[in-house]
Image (spheres, rainbow, N blue to C red):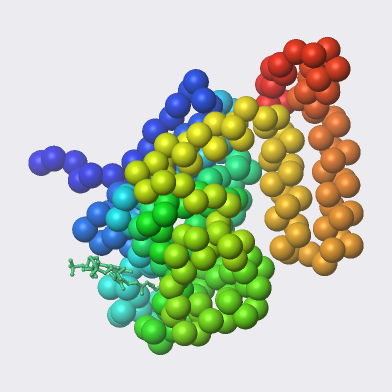
Length: 261
Ligand code: CAA
């Protein structure tokens, strides 16, 4: 019997030092069931452990990045089922990834899909992308970060509108509101996201990982602690060979050769 198709398609591009994970559940608009999330977490862990991968792209299809958590799977679950299965805790595997992650979003990016995109470090969106948190329409609420991350990204008024009324945001609206970093042509979403990932991958990998940690602190701590944390990881970066290489290369007017150490 033929093997079932993987729910996450994985590709490495050694020249650009990037790796891509594409959600592959087209008949369900990439709804995030436990199996898919498990495959995604495994792929991300393996990329993160690979020194030659310096930026990761997570994408879906033209039609959908992901239309949310799998509603069928949740429909029969009790609170205790959700708690015992540690459904949302699984998402911590994505948060734990130190390598920068670009979300490449085309089409529907809803509910848990939007939360997945927001868990990535930046979002490159097709003009066709549609963002929303429709959970309250299902009688539940976002549980994988949207009440916090969306509010940080777009502010209270718009976050309340999106979460309470189910308002959908176009790619342009999401860009203007600060949810999305770049909007690109409809047919170019994946190529452009990979291009951005390639630019990130060309920078100092240690510096990028530490900078990612420090930016994330801006969400998690008050400003004074965040600034203190930023200063400490900056000092730590000076212990890396990459910092010495990057700084000397600039002074010596040559391109740097980063080793990720
Ligand atoms: N879970 C499971 N199946 C889903 C799904 C989801 N989140 N979203 C879509 N599907 C399925 C549909 O049931 C449909 O299956 P069938 O062909 O067997 O009927 C298939 O994918 C295609 O979808 P549609 O026929 O509905 O496509 P459409 O173009 O008419 O509509 C849509 C697209 C507006 C995105 C619509 O599918 C929709 O509203 N989906 C649900 C969106 C949603 O509410 N997401 C939030 C989920 S809850 C959550 O994410 C919780 C959390 O925070 C952790």
